[in-house]
Image 1 (spheres, helix red, strand yellow):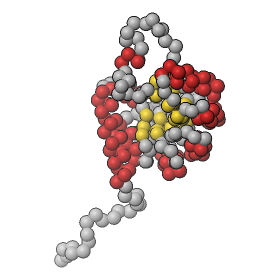
Image 2 (tube, helix red, strand yellow; image 1 turned 120 degrees about the vertical axis):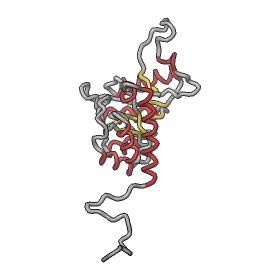
Image 3 (cartoon, rainbow, N blue to C red; image 1 turned 90 degrees about the horizontal axis):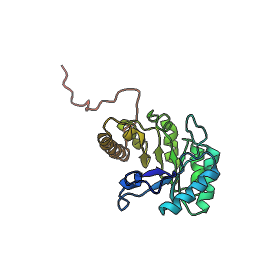
Image 4 (cartoon, rainbow, N blue to C red; image 1 turned 180 degrees about the vertical axis):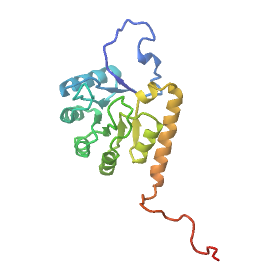
Length: 218
C-alpha cells in the first residue's frame, strides 16, 4: 500500500491516521514522495519516510507540473541516482518515455512505473505503443502507475506485458469500491493470462476457422 508522508498530530485520537486501519503484519507500506517538486525535497522526504516507517523501499515522485501532475523527467532521474546511492529500493513514477525508463533502470532503480494517463484522470491507456516498447526493452519490472479508470484498462495494461498496475482513484472513487477492487483483481489475472497465452496476429482479411476441405458441393 502506497502512502504519502505528511505532518500528523501525534496526540490525535485513534482512527485519525490511515495507519490505524492497516495491518502491518500483512501489508507492506510503500511510502512515496508525492507533492515534491524538486529532487532535493524528494530525497529529504524519502529519508524521513525510511526513518519513520522502517523501510527503504520507496515510490519516487518528482512532479514537474501542478496542473497535469506529470513527472519531471530530469528531476526524477537526478533524485533516483542519489537515492540508489543512499541504499533505497527506488520505484520511480515516470512518463511513458522508453529512453527515460531505460536510464532509470541503468542508474539502479528496482522497477519503472510509467503513467498510462494523468494521475486520477481515469483516461486509461493513452499510449499503448510506448508501453509495449518499454516492456520489450525493460531489464526491470514495469508497473503502470496512474490513469487506470476501470477494469478493462487494467486488462489492456496487463495484456501489453507489464508486471503490474498501481491504482487508487479508480477504486476509491467508484460507487462501490469493494466491488471495483474485486473487478480489478479479476482484470489483472485475466490480462496476465492472456499475455502469457499469446494473442493471435491482427490481419486485415478474414481467415477461415473451419477447414475448407470436404465441403459439400452440388
